[in-house]
Image (cartoon, rainbow, N blue to C red):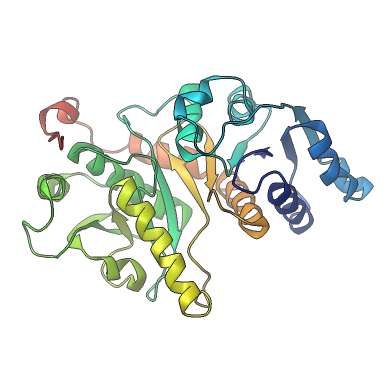
Length: 321
């Protein structure tokens, strides 16, 4: 796993701590630490000889700041270097808690997008009363068009089937009500698209769902929304757990998300992630790679019916500005 040592609000301290916890929890884990040598040395010094043998360092001193424009990822930096490591086969997956826009940009430029995926999506899995709920997008594409949301529904259904073994996932579109015609122009245009969209893994579209369906999980296993709304919702759920005195028994809102739609395993941690969050992000990346989740999701999409879909992204998109 390639780890961006300089990504995140509290990097490098929490990243070093999180990587250390991940190493101790997983005896088969090998890490490529990307960042200043002196930072990597802090982690290595805390490990025993056998664990040190599972550490490799790639010295990079520059990083993309949390307030920097995503285009900054084009320059030499830790986030660009972890992407390059995956592209070159030096690493199997990458983890960064840096700026989401920069990480997504670097991954798209360095790894390339899957066919028919114009906008990759960040997918998170939330613990719900009736079982895990896959939520996407949570920050990758802030203002998607209807056709993009429809493709994200396909991504989410495949991810739920592969990563969480959900049989015949139920897919819902997040809106302000469940009745047909509810929501803004994008939601009203996306709803009929999803009603006829072929979904992989035996998935089926259940229609519009509301915010409480994300935490209850009774109506949908996959909830699709734009990256702006999804990110706000995710952080609101985190705040609600804090008010309630802690997350449910099944775990809290995730502080890491997988990027779907690029040719590699990419995990983006919360910018304000702590050490435990970084460790869980590294564990998620390892889990996805071991299950070949990204390859299997891509394969499900390749097997999906694509007839008459080649022009859909231009014929049915509704501009919102």
